[in-house]
Length: 304
Image 1: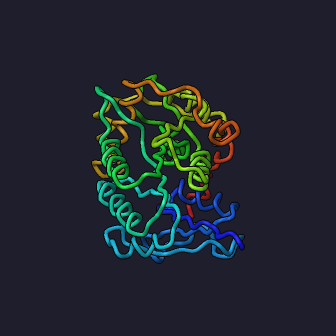
Image 2 (image 1 turned 180 degrees about the horizontal axis):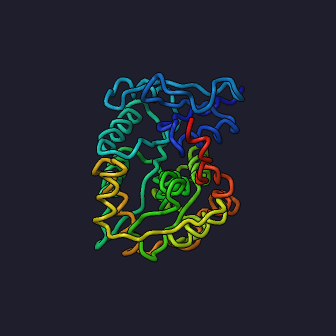
Image 3 (image 1 turned 90 degrees about the vertical axis):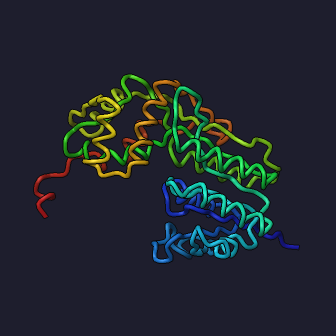
């Protein structure tokens, strides 16, 4: 009798991590169903490009019946929604839908636990979701990365145009992990035949890096001087809300993450080698691959 392929549902399939989960799952013997919040959103992986086992559905994260339809017949769910004040409600809705549909396993992308005196509101959101997940599933795992290398792409404007990195990190270091390595851990947990025993796993990259060190690394790959400008948390918050025009909650989150690294030193070695059976990517690899994102565009190109 032919073995039935497992069906994996991927929420957040168009995001940086979710897209990579989709890409890696297509190399395994499984059916992959990506969930789009907007039916007009471009597919992260074109249907039929490599595998006939990739499909998509669209679902409103507030509509429980649509979420049930998205989870129907699934064996496992990758739980990821965009960070926002609605995240707790959205992910609880997905957990409810998955339980109703008899989904056996949920792998959630979460965040590290934060202890006083540091405070990160988004981390508190994740703790609420994790608690709800533990009440509604016996086979789950929460992945807790510190910071993604790809988050540096949010700083491309000031780096390209002014040659500057702004932050309130001082000389503290942050631990960065490549989203592709996080996706590999997620895929391994989604597909393993064993019941998941570890209900949470801290994911750390190979090194902790200061913003001063990041400025030096970016200077090397861009061929121009990049400077780190350390400013007070209040000044950074003002700059993020007025100049970058970020919503208050997101600007506050960025400032809180800098404060977290100061008050809670982050690991300077990886925790994922044994999970992915290889050494994780280092920051220099990521920057070399993506150096064009940080380079200043020629003036003649900026005129058109």
